Image 1 (cartoon, helix red, strand yellow):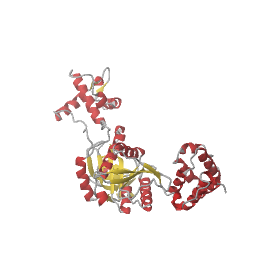
Image 2 (image 1 turned 120 degrees about the vertical axis):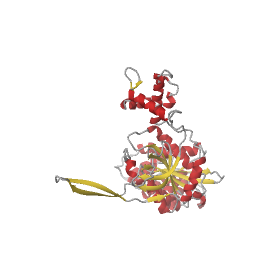
Image 3 (image 1 turned 60 degrees about the horizontal axis):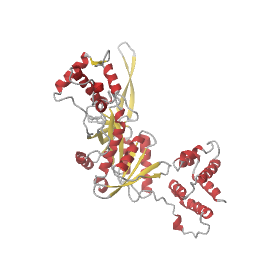
Image 4 (image 1 turned 90 degrees about the vertical axis):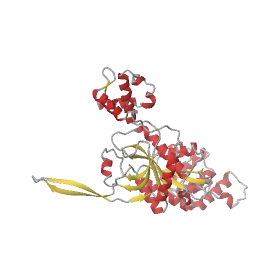
Length: 464
């Protein structure tokens, strides 16, 4: 049998059609190769044949190709090794005397030793923040590997605050939500353990919605307690009105299970947060409230002839860069008028005067720095846009600080795996009607920055 036929037969024995296409997609020039393959309506034999032909033309059948096969199917290493030998004999080393150790295709781009932290994210933006900060702030090189299901993950070796090395693995779920987060966490913990790289802790960074008045946009919430607030049962209760009409009401009986941050770890985080300084190199955005206050305040000064028109003010680009949105909101609230020129309404002027009376030293601006809060974080299956959500949730857990979509599932996996869990998420909105996309990238970055900094500082997570 010719080498190409052996490789074709090997691919057919290793993969079904979907698995083979996924293997190719995450390989070199994957999308280009996939675009040139025949339709999936043809047989696996035909797709495998065309795959070998394309890979040869691109010069992609090499040691790395066979090593990737081993990473995909470690249980078939011996079969892959034999095919690799046949390929070498035929195409490269006619007179080579083979030494078995030269054909050890076990992957060398996997973490060595134990993994100090497995970091899970739910979104591409969140994973990008982890990888970018690792590379730009800590100057590490992330290597990429493919897990047994064909999904990529990344690992790198960092230097911690004490001069020792720590190995982190980072990946993201295929999509948002608890099921996807739990699946990738479970799969990678199992796979890393099977390869002798058992993770010492499970961590997560990213974005969440915060409780207005308790946290601010861009602040970081460390989950002291993780809980799923849409568990339980809904019971329909039918009652009769005085005129005999039937009314059906639904009552939710919540079934709350929490996953708690270890107390020693909480104390360590509290102490670390006092000295932590962000290093992401990205300035904190201005909230819409900050920009509204600025515009109203400067317009009030202008009307009293003690300042320029706000649109020409030197601070406008830094203090009110969402000009159109802010102006539209103020007009809707009847605080300003634009006919014939921009001016405060009576209601707007009264608002500024009350604000100045309450704050004689000047209106309260956004804090320059993100704060770190430690408290309960709820998990829900759906994106929330409900102004009254936290009013209802405080009946379940009075001190709740935020909500997100994956944390309790990751906490559950960590509990079953017997390792600590650390969730650090930054507030991107308040789960109400006033969404502020200015904070999305900042919140991804700031949560990643804090998580990596703490993981490199913590002694408890590494030494117990």
